[in-house]
Structures are given as C-alpha cells and as structure tokens.
Amino acid sequence: MSALRDLYQQVILDHNRNPKNFRVMQNATGSIEGYNPLCGDHYTIYVRMDGDVIADISFTGAGCAISKASASVMSSMLKGKTLGDAEGMFRDFRGLVTGALASEEEMERLGKLAAFAGVSEFPARVKCASLPWHTLHAALDGTSHAISTE
Amino acid sequence: MHTTTVHSNKADAPNVANQPGQANQDLLERFEAVRLCRHHFPLLRRRVNGKPLVYFDNAATSQKPQVVIDATIRYYEEENSNIHRGVHYLSERATQAYEGVRVKVQHLLNAAHQREIIFVRGTTEGINLVAYSYGRTCVGAGDEVLISAMEHHSNIVPWQILCEEKGANLRVIPINDRGEIELAEYEKLLTPRTKIVALTHVSNALGTINPVKTMVAMAHAHGIPVLLDGAQAVPHMKVDVRDLDCDFYVFSAHKAFGPTGVGVLYGVTKLLDAMPPYQSGGDMIKSVTFEKTVYNDLPYKFEAGTPNIGGGIGMGAAIDYINEIDLASLAEFEHELLDYATKRVAEIPGLRIIGTAREKAAVLSFVIDGIHPHDIGTILDDEGIAIRTGHHCAQPVMQRFGVPATARASFAFYNTKEEIDVFLAALHRVREVLG
Image (tube, each protein chain N blue to C red):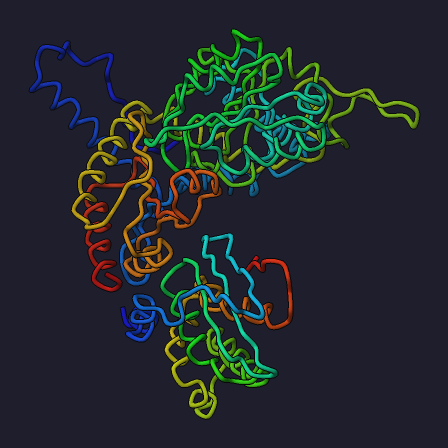
C-alpha cells in the first residue's frame, strides 16, 4: 500500500490529470516521437532551442499516469535551462528511478522530480518514467527517427 | 495420477431434462467438483504482495497441476536420456515415454495418425513451420494469404515475411464492433489467388470463439487449406481436428496446464508429406552422405535435433490431467465466471469491455476512461491480482477498437467467484487512487 502511494504521489496524479505544456509546438526547432511498444505509450516531444537554451518545450501523446506525469514535470522543469543543465537532470533522474541515487545532496538537486522516487520500487514502470526523457535526449541529439524503449 | 476424481457422471445422471430442480442440482454438483480441482495447482496457494494470489492471466500461461510438475521431475530423476538413438535401457524408456505423448496428443485432437502430430516449441514455431515450409512451396507472386483482423502477432508476422519474400499479398478478414468475423466479407476474400487461410480458433485479446468449422468448409469449397491457431482453444474446449476438418492445427502446452517450450503442430498427411523440412540436422534424416541426404518419414522429418523431452513428458501429464477432469464441465464453469465478471464490472464507472462476441471464451478485456491499463495493472498487482495489460501481441486489434492497450483478465476453471469479488474491489480502488 505505501509503495503504491509512493508511486502515485499527488504531484504525479496532478500532472497526469492536468499536464503542463501539453500542446503541439508550431515553431519547434526539433521534435521526435518516442514509444514503448510493450504498453503502447506514445509521445511526441517538441523543443525550441535558442542557442544553448531550451526556450520552449512541449509534448503531445498518450500513455500511463507515470509516463504522462514524467513528460509534464520534465517540460516544466527544463524550460529556460541550458543543454548542460538538461543532461545533468536526465542523469539524476535516471539514477533516481533505478534506485541508484542515494545522497541527500543529490535528492535536493532533483526538486519536483523527487516525486518519481517511488518508481524504483516498480521495475516494470521504470521505462514509463524514463520514456519522455529518452525521447527528449534523442530530440536534442538531432535523431530523426522515432525512438523506442525496446 | 493422484487427482481427485471429478467425472461429471453425465451418462449416469437420470433424465433431468424435465426436472429443472434436479438439473440445477446436477450443475451445482459438477461445479463443486470443478472447484475441488483448484487444490491440484500448488502455485495458487501462494501470496503476492502480502495478499492471496488471484491469478487472472491464464491466457498468457496457465498454472501447472502437481501431476505435471511431478512427471517432469520424475523424468529428470529417473529416465533422463536422449531419445531415438540409444540401445540402452534409459534411452528406450525415454523414447517410449516421449513417443507415448504423441499418441496422447493424437487422441486429444482426434487426429487420424500419430505421424500427423509434430512436436514443436509452441504455437509460434508451429505457424512459422507452416509459413516457411508449406508457404514457400505453395505461395507465389501475386498469390494471397488470408488471415483475420483479430490475429496474434505470431499469426501475422510469419505470413507477412512470406508475402514480402514471394511478392504475395496478405489479406485481412474484417471483424465487427463486437469482435466477430464478418463471414460475408470472408466469403468475398476467398479467391483463386488465396493459397492458405490462417485463423485463430479463439482470440487471445477479445475472447471471441470463431466459427472455425464453417470457415474451414467455406475455404475448402474453394480448395484452400486452413491453419487454425488453437493456443487459446485447447485449454478450454474439446478440439476435434477431423470434425473441424482443418489442414493444420497448432497449440502450446503451457497454456494448457503443461510446461513452456513445447507444443504441437497437427497437419494432414497429404500436405505434410509434400512439404520440405523446416529445420535440418539430426533425427530428421534417414541417411546422410556428402552427396545426398534422405529425409526421415513423418513426423520426424520436421523434428530436427534433440527435442524438449522433459517438456514433452510434462505435456503428456497435462493431457492425462485434462482427460481425467471433465472439459465440458470446466468450460461451463468458466462461462459462469465470465458471465459473473461481465455483470459485476458494469458497476465500475467508465469501464468498457473490448470484445463482446456472442460466442466467447473466458477473456475479459477492458478499458477505463481516463486511466491507462498499465496503471490498472500496477494497482491490481498491489492487491495480489495478476492480469495482463498492454496490446496482448495483437496491435491491429487495438487499432481496430481505437485503444492503445487494454487490461485483460482471463480465467481458468480453478478461478472462483470470490476472486472476481476481490478483483472488483481492486477496480474500485483503481478509481479511488487515479479517478
């Protein structure tokens, strides 16, 4: 029960119900689709870069509460950040959901992302939480084909 | 075999047709007998996440009765040896046991000959064998392979690869909103270009039981052979391949209370004889020189290499088990479970059942408005309930119904109405947590 409450924290439920930046971006400088063929989660992430800075980020698509909230929180946290910041956050997030992040300092750095700590107790759901991040990563790398968790 | 006897005693029962009270009593007694079978499955006694396990993922794989587990262990403890080649005692014992399973399968399916029973790894390999061996000799450029819109990926992809290779076309029989084959459309799709029809007997994603006997007859009227995918049928109903008159029938042991990694391809002798081998190596040959190899007779022509002997023997024990229990009573009981679950889930706001065929096996696929199946699966798991969530290896079915995925509860005779009540309470909890 408590593990389940840890997974479905209020932050996650809120972002799932009312996702932030959930829209198509007309003037995107990059966009890419990401999907998980095992469960059918499917998102498109849009970014508009201004030099080294993520000037705008949005997403569309459908999937479970964990993946949708993850995309929403990610988009709200990365707006205005540099590519370097984004890389760092991605690294921390990956560590968080795979249970590899331990120190208080690291947890502190995560801010709202810490809501996803419960995911590490559910190995089958790690891919759900990571999908938007992997997709964004590919978009920033300039990958042109859709990316898949498998 | 130390199972509790659960014969239905149908033959011994007095004429109850005009005595409804007694007929009802008879049914209750038979259902009680079915309920006793639950104790044959040791895994069902375990707990998951601190709760008694509720196993509703039977369409993915069934649990195994103690007799199957024991037979497999006994084989490795007492008979383990390679088959078909040794003159020593153990090899003969193992060969006898393994070949004995072929006879059991022959009787289970009511096949005419032992040689028509080919052991494979499972349904997927059986279909691949036919697509590869029959397909590559009989399907050419411009020809057509006909499948239905409710096939599992394993009955789509092998044919797709074949068609690509040969320049042939894959045609698809449409289904209606209930998830039933459109028979009139099927008739139109049977043409002189159609070289084979490959069709699921029971849909894993929707539960639909297809009118396969009629569909085989319709294909045969055009001289077209039919392969039936029986993966979801064999565990739930009596299958008679000669009555169905199909040309190929495939199933996996593991969905029918046997071990994983073993299954059966049934094929009529006339077609199997004309087909080239699928894989080559030991056991499938009569003689080998560097100039020429003479292939073995049926069924060994299609059984290259040392097979899954232990798995085969486990499958034999599973067939003995199926024979000892009464499949007809079990099917009725499963139907009762499905009806009960179908009625109860109507309580859940926003729940929609995907697959409402009039003829249906014990599969309940559903979606809940605004809640992704994956989240349903995680919350149910927390309550000890195992269901499948996702596309069930049937993405075209999901596309047909306009959903990315479904949650699927699939029942076996060892499930109970009490478990369905637990399932319902958990679905209410899903709404609470995520609604």
